[in-house]
Image (cartoon, rainbow, N blue to C red):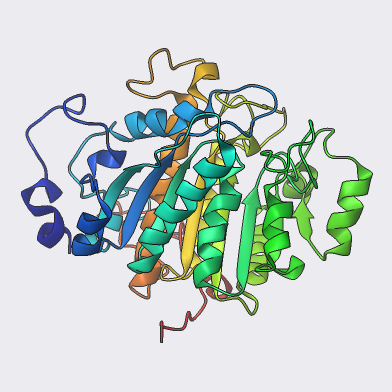
Length: 372
């Protein structure tokens, strides 16, 4: 698949990583819906440079640009053999960068409509959309497209905050802290199919958490992550998302990470996930998700506050972590697409590890039914 779709670039090109247009991972750039329909990629990355739903520190509109910049280091080739897992997403998937949604500055409703349309275009060709945010209000617009295709949706939500408010802090319906409530109002998701991982701190209050409990939501605070463990939490989140649903949506707020690992975000909160915990979560998620019925967004990357990013040319700590989460998930989905739950990394003759980077347990890898 790799050589067939990417040509000689799959194995390597003779230009430096700082040369060329910063598409995601230097993937081919698809500029029109017509070209998308002709190429029919398996994966399409979409930028959503939007932060009009932000209530405190703006800047996530520059997230897609910074994530793309960070993704070009290391540079081509497209062949991305992961030394720990032996997985290569581009040996399995035809992947492209579908550019940015042309948002309308200051017009939240119109911008959300354009997001819904662009995501729908990818879903219409049976592609997997990966959205680069943007503030968290974009999730409502993206799920709205998802709900046009799938009747029942499961959701896994990584976040410092519950984002289930009936309206935002200043009374705005489409605030980045209200997207889960907007999704529930569409009727496409049952509470039993939703899991939140990572909340901590002092917002929202008890009334909202009581509402979440009444909806049969599940959540695991950072104290739970510490006490219960990543593996158990990941399994429950996957099982809940897949229980009687047609598709799963993963939404990952970068502020779920501790500011030491992801300072470039609008609402940092101490005591978050480590980057290692995030990678283990995403690898486990990928073993229980159907790549034919899936979408993801990564939100709230705000490079202005990233201590290592002065120009967004090469990205910073936060955008580098964000792009790697997406790449890692693509790699795991590639194994699942092939019916595998482990890759083939190169090991030393006297290997001392367990070899369970993807092969955690048979219970984590579901027998996913094929599309009808």
